[in-house]
Length: 218
Ligand SMILES: [Zn+2]
Ligand SMILES: [Zn+2]
Image 1 (cartoon, helix red, strand yellow):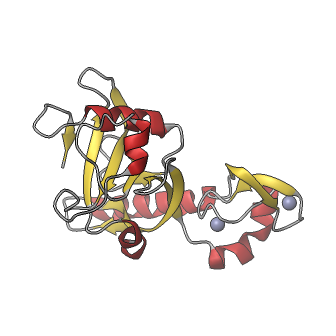
Image 2: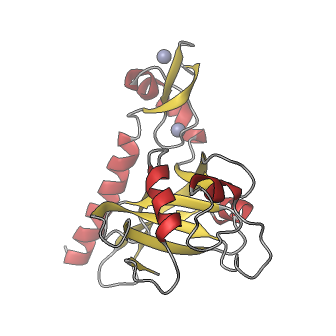
């Protein structure tokens, strides 16, 4: 067996294990009845974040039915153009493996139709530290915004204006979405953001200015 094939199998196995592990529920801020037993619960399927289950046992018991409709997605932090507070929104993705490079590399293909609903064009910044003297983030923040927001007459982002007290480093306009990168070297491999990322982002929106040294890569 060649090394490439071994690597490929290892990656396929990782993806399969990851899907299997998706039966570990993740908490939500709202409650809904468990699909299996009807008990009110705030635990959801960690893959789609949509189906509620009271326990890992009931996800496992219902997985045969649920896997047919379970569409994996990340929860992104949305800074809405026209609302005061950030909210979590679902960005579906497909797990893929890039076989063009030296070794097969898994990545997440974010659903472009969903991204288009929020953003006109897409540009990303990978923020690996907050502030010029901040510590390196284990999981960098991925900031997604409309590619031409400064010239396409997008309205000023009310949410970012609010959370920075009007002290935005640049006039962010249109919607802004934030995800986490799985790790510093895991390009195009994401994790969900959370409400707890909002304060770090507020600092970023305040401090980030064009042409000012700031650690990120495009
Ligand atoms: Zn249940
Ligand atoms: Zn699911």
